[in-house]
Length: 259
Image (cartoon, rainbow, N blue to C red; front, side, top):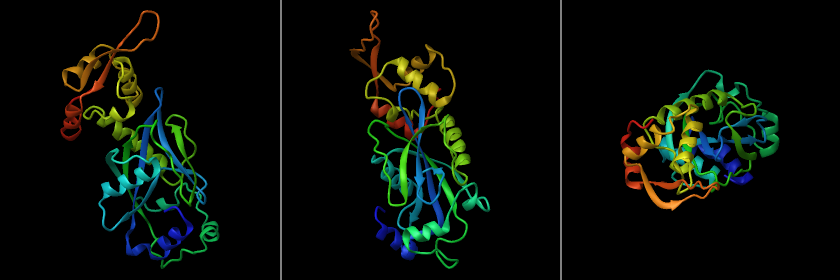
């Protein structure tokens, strides 16, 4: 929804197409070569930053709704997505947020009253996504003023219960690292063993054995060694590798012991 007319229609007649009191919120992670980042949205009427999210259409399931939200915010379809937890504490709609109902009414020219389909407590299904930060194009809409990346270790204050959401998303992602090779979207098509080791150290928050980890990836058939080498000076030329697509997709679907 990019225009004020679309938002007004959503407020007045959204119950026709959307499920009331149920949303998805997405922790979208990226990697800049040095640190783990998360995509946050700044709303015009909620003064704190939040995770991207939205209501669920009646003709889509939870995964499809999360895929739509992440596509709208990054411009990239078919991201790796995992559901990690549902949030439904009493009072969560106003928890640590800065919702200004009068400002909302002034901005849209529509008031949400007690009979609105948008009133009442809302439960949120949390997903995390992994995206290629180089090709992602963070996007705003009519209600958001900013959409940009933040290092997960240096975050601004988050609205509602999104700080708890992000902590849970990080925990889930780091647990899944042990069973799913989710790093493909975060690296270039070709990379050195040092680069993939550094990525997984950033994602997991742990130091990995410089020899055992790459050997493990190769023994699982996830990496293909290329003939090309990376010239980094000082007579050092580490070999490039790439993910073996068939083995990678199988591991995503079936899981394995990775780290």
